[in-house]
Image 1: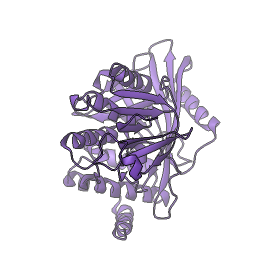
Image 2: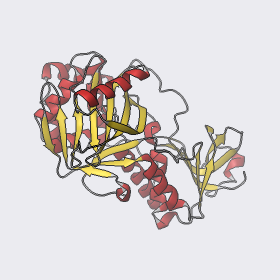
Image 3: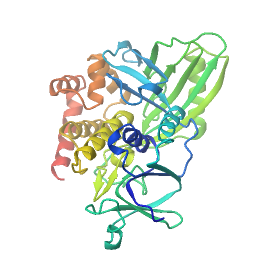
Length: 399
C-alpha cells in the first residue's frame, strides 16, 4: 500500500469517529489525506451513549432523547433532581455510526478500510521519505495481513494489550446489560429518567439500575455494576427481569433491543502519546475511573486535538490540572470501594443528598470549582475519605 496519509485513525469506535467527524466538519482538513481502519462495518446498534451537557455540541443532530429531570433512588435517600443548566442526553450507536459515515461518504480525502490493526509501528529513515509531511517523524500501523501504512500521525483507540494489573492501581469494571422494552399500554414518563436506582441487591458491590424512557411505551432498562469481577451471564438477565416485574410493575412487554458492555474503571495512568502515536478513547484514559462515563471526555479531547492541529501546536497534550485533580478524586473513591470502607450506594446517596444535582454533575465531569469540590467532599464521612485521600496523594508523590 504505497499511498501516503496525513492522519490514520486506528479504530472507528466512539473516539475515532468523534475525531473523524470533527475533522470532516472543518475546512482546514479538506486537503489532508485521512485513513480510517476498523475491522467492523459499524452498521449495528451495539451500544448507547448517555451523557450530560449544557450546550449543544457536534452530535446534537442525532441526540435520540434527552431529559431535564432525573430520579435518584436508594435505601438511604431518594429525590427528583432538576439538573439545569444540564440536559441528560442519549445517542444510539447506530445513529452515531451512520451520521459519521454519511458525512464522510462524499469526501474524497477520507478513506475507510475494513481491516484489523495488528500493532502500531515506529519510524525508519526509509519511511520518513514516504510521508506526506517529511518534517515529521511518521507513525504507522501494521495490518493483520502484514501491510504497513504510515502517516504523520496515528490516532489509536485500540487497546492492544490488557491493562497492566499493578499494585498501585485500582482495577474496577463498569459492566452492564440493557434491555430496550416496549409495553402494550403507557407505563413511562418520557420527560424524566431514572439516573440511578440503588434499590437492588448490593451483594456484588455498587449496583444500580437505569431507566431511560423515550416514549410512554418504550424505555431502556439497564443493570449496571461497579465491581472488580464480572457476573455469570444469567445473573444480569435475571436482575433486569426481576426489576421490571417487581419495581416497575410491568408484566406485559417485548424486548426490542439488547446491549451489554464492559468498561474499565481504573486508576492506571494511560499514556496519551508516544512520538506521533496519539492515544484516544479508553486507550487514552478517557473513561472516567469513578463512573465509566467516557463520551463527554472524548469530545473534549478530540476537540483539543483538532484545535492543536489547526494551530500547528504539539499534540503532546498532557492532562490539565482539572483532569489531574479528577484522577485523584477517582482514586480516592476506588480506594474506599476496593477496601470496602463504605458501600457505593451510600457514597452516592450522601453526595446527591448534600448537594445540588448540577454541582455533582459538574464534579463528575472534572469541571467544578475548588469550592464545589470541598463542599461535595464534605458530604461524605471525613474519617473514611480523608485517610484514603492522604494515602492516594502519597502514591502520587512517589511518581
